[in-house]
Length: 126
Image (cartoon, rainbow, N blue to C red):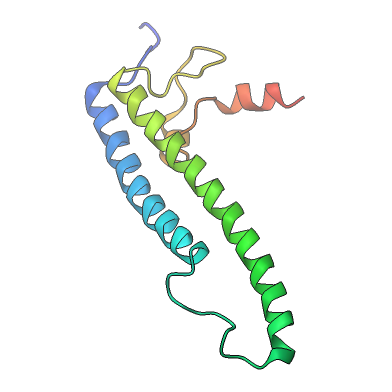
């Protein structure tokens, strides 16, 4: 029996559902982070005593920097999920970009935006 070269349309639909669910959650998290960065909830240090204001502003800056990093990471994750959806449309989803072989379905269920098999990923890190 010949080795499978791509996932069936039914399997691709299963992966699409997984990706869409993760994409919805990721977008919600990203929007929440963006809202925090923009301080839309109005929590500020304007009404606190001047003694604590400097300390709070420093902590606020640190927190904002961390939130910005998290938002950037979340945005990259969203872009990777969107790219995976394009690969599903092109019927190239699940094919390792290094070996050309199918990435195991279990790995794709866990990491639906994966473009490398475990073997290729481990081989590339040496």
